[in-house]
Length: 110
Length: 141
Image (cartoon, rainbow over the protein chains, first blue to last red):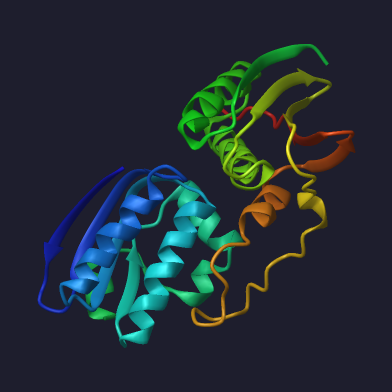
């Protein structure tokens, strides 16, 4: 799994690629958690390069979302593809998160 | 069904990749499309990480995975010698809950049940046997 970030005016865009499984999901959670500690409150997470996600990844995402919600922060997703889109759908995550096609749309949705 | 893949290995997270590689290799050889192999990898990860976490906390035993194919089906049998744990009896999560209401976790068994075509569990003395069956879909292009 690779994580890269880009600071935009309304949010931090976090691009995640590779696999978010039981081994790598804690890295994602720690990364977002560190940014929250540093004061970031709005995130657009681009998953267009994420090939695979398991419940460990969903668990990390939900943990970050709960922490952000307590601080009136936002966690928005963009660019979901194939397998990841299917898993979000099965898990009902597409009902509890804002999901956009692109980062630009996601940034407008912040 | 003839066996097409087998691994017996300590039930620890560090071995997730070796287990996944064994099963996805067997599934690809059986003619499954990459997308369907992805579904299998996910169901498999959920099943084996449950064993890693709950079968024998603090004192991991072994896990044995045997794949078999035949009759248009591909089966993954997962054996462990830990505590009794029947995922087929777990209640489904409430997907209508919002971020604050949703408990952390509880989606793994649900994903297995949604992705596999059949899930069965047997408890023998000292032994859990979970079998996931996937129907071989017709290859497209």
